[in-house]
Length: 156
Image (cartoon, rainbow, N blue to C red; front, side, top):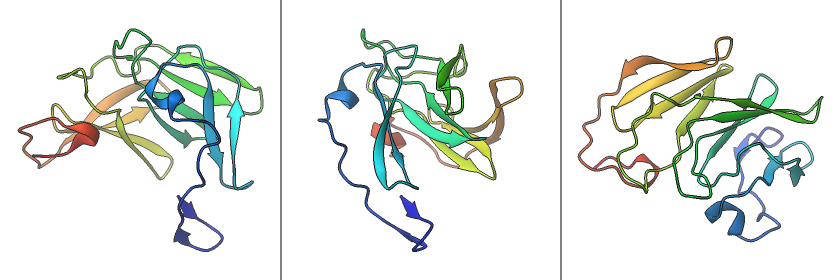
């Protein structure tokens, strides 16, 4: 995590629960509050998920993709609004993604200038999330040839 006070990258403290929440589908959501410098738990999300990605965007916490309790890839996302203490389900947020393998990595995402970008590893496409219309649009083709699709999008 980037520590804005010290302007350096810092290691996050260990999550106060086991790794169970990452490897088993759950509706429990834990995030790191950089201002309070501690982990916080928020109310449960709509869809139980594991191996998902998360980020802050436009003042909300987003959870994207992952797999459900039956190990099926989820194409929905959810956004958490701290002011209302509620989650909004975003159906088909990742509907155009191609899932090559059951062990495919979580969505590879980054927030830059308050825009959410995602790398579609199976097609080498960089997409941007249209927050107004709630969908990912294709933007650029990435100049990396993929021969294998490994954990966290390794290019081999």
